[in-house]
Amino acid sequence: MTPRTRFGIAAVIILILVAVGLLFWGPIRQALFGPSAGPAHVVVSGNIEAHQSVLSFTDVQAPIVYLPFDEGKYVKAGTPLARVDNRLYRQQVQIDRSNLEVASRQVAVDTSNLAAAQNTVVSDRFDLAEKRRDLARDKEQLPLGAVSRQAYDLAFTAAAQASAALARDQALVRVARDNISLARANLTAADAKMKLDEVTLSYTTLRAPFSGVLAVREAELGELASPGVAIFTLDDLDHVWLRAYVNETNLGQVRLGEPVDVTTDTYPGKVYHGRIGFIASQAEFTPKTVETHAERVTLVYRIRIDIYNPTHELLPGMPADATIALLPAGR
Image (cartoon, rainbow, N blue to C red; front, top):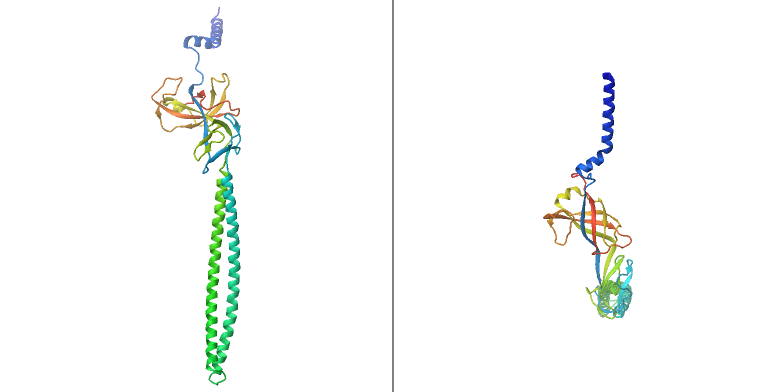
């Protein structure tokens, strides 16, 4: 066998060994070193939370006469949830309307009085002008003896009285203008009072501020509703989240907006999709109620995972797990 032949055979054997090594490297590596590590993940646990609003009446106190919904009912925003006896508040609005009408008519009356006073002033000016002309004629005729001293004195007095009447009626015009200003102010106040009582009347109906599920009903028909006394607790199940905590060692590997898979024991095998919506900027000691799959450390950071919940299957208080992919630090 020539050296060239031996070299060719050796090369073929080496190629065969390389091919076999590549083919079986995976099983050999797994046998020697264990399964290959995939993308790093961390699993955190917590409880589902939702926006909750405790609903009560505002600025009214009366017996409840309308309470159609029980706990667990889904209601849309604006739905009337309860109503109290509003007869007293409706009567107050009716009184306000009457007062507003009176104030409006008072403005009209004072406006007419002003017009009358102004017309009187015009008449007074004409009368004064006439009296002054008479006085001027008598003053010219007095030295000639055409008029008596008494006639002249009477003309003088008449002119003075006309001047005083004009001053008086001009003052009455100013008073009439002031009365109109006062009447308009009263009209504005009456209108504001009516609008305020209309708002109070609207408070006799309790409406849902947003769409959600009535989690708790805390009142019954006939009970006296007062400001601040809870009637319902409304949960916004369209926007739920998972409150969880990540260890300080993993903080640099999670990001805002990162997609997260959420599972629950209630619906095994079903995955809910969420995103990290909040990462606390300050560490805190591990809460006693928090359970983690990793070894607990002294300091953790709170995160909020917003979850898409169109079917309202996820309810407040429900325990859940979230699987978060750990990104390379500093990415």
